[in-house]
Length: 120
Image (cartoon, rainbow, N blue to C red; front, side, top):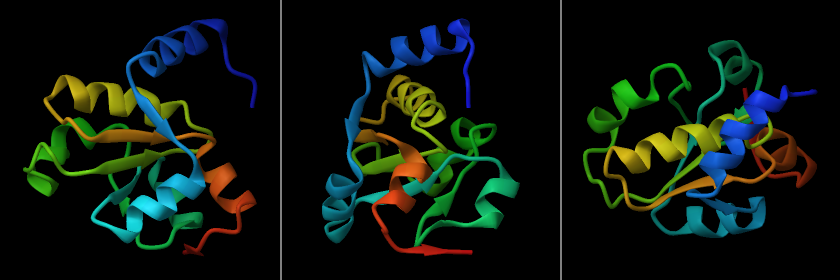
């Protein structure tokens, strides 16, 4: 997908403050106590998602995150389709006080390319 220069500018800004992890790093962190959160749209999640991921769409994550994860030290790995929306969401969660938030580089596309476990 081709993104506008304006969208890329705000995602680049967010990425300057957000830590990214690869799919391999995410899989390793998930063996411990990390939580994988899919921030894509409902229809994207319904079509297929990372196994055992939690769906908190980009439009509601800031509203619902505290109820789902009240511990601001919880390790949260966010992903979207390609790693842009997850960076924006991770940046906002950090602004809300979450200290252990990551964006998964490459998102769902990278997850599938790595043959990581999926479900629908």
